[in-house]
Length: 126
Image (cartoon, rainbow, N blue to C red; front, side, top):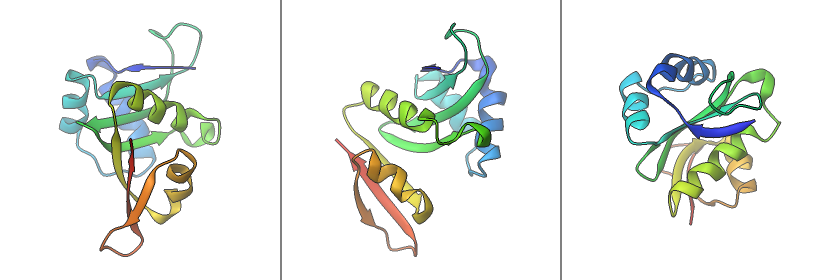
């Protein structure tokens, strides 16, 4: 598995992964992320240029707009690899998320605080 910036041709596959995780994100946001290097993909295989997209992460500046991994590949460190790759590209990242994914962000060392919305949190990792 390799993590790299997505290319324009991969936008439909990225949307497929994000839609499969029931994340609300627009195609335009993903495209903008592709253009500025903020849409990252985890791909299978030995050749990072070729392979099936296993997961995707979309950054807007330093904010993680979305991160998702194909259902059958969850729990294999792919989401962690995507967030770590985002941290390699930015000096800090933030995210807003529901309570059910809080353990994921805690395990990655995010500083977490509750938001005004019930069961919503904001995390930051310097």
